[in-house]
Amino acid sequence: MRRQDVAIALLWAAILIVIGLVVRYALGPLLQATAQVLAAVVSAMAIILGGILTHAFTQIREQDLAQRKTQQENYKTLLAKIDQVIRTPNSPNDEFVKVHLESWVVGSAEVIQYTRELLDSTTPEKRKEALEQLLKAMRKDVGLSSTEQHLGNIFLPPATAGGLPPAK
Figure 1 (cartoon, rainbow, N blue to C red):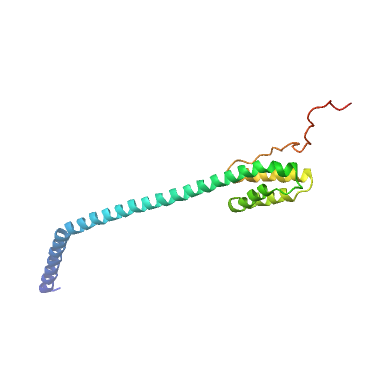
Figure 2 (tube, one colour):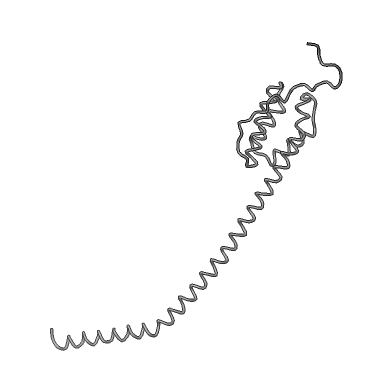
């Protein structure tokens, strides 16, 4: 290699070193300031997004609680009217039918199905089975655990008031 080529290579190396030092010392503070601004912008966006998500999840939870409360109130009314259907199954019962229709709006498909089965049942045994299934579906809907308990014999004819006990 010639001396002249070595001198040019050293000159280029010196120029590159000088340019590197100028970039490092001149652009360093600018890059640092940019990084700080970028970090602040990202932090602000994260805070705003966190607030939006918190608000959205709170709204969803409140709507779910309101729906569950409406559902529970409907089921409570349905159970209050169910005794008339059990005691006199062949008579029309507009109040129970009205509550049953409300169940179509807030109740699950199972509750609607078993209410319909209760309305359509013709024997006390079928009514008891439909009522048990309806109560289990309601428990499931309102978030209670399942139960294996049975209603027992709730369809006994009412005892006659007064009089002497039957002869044995």
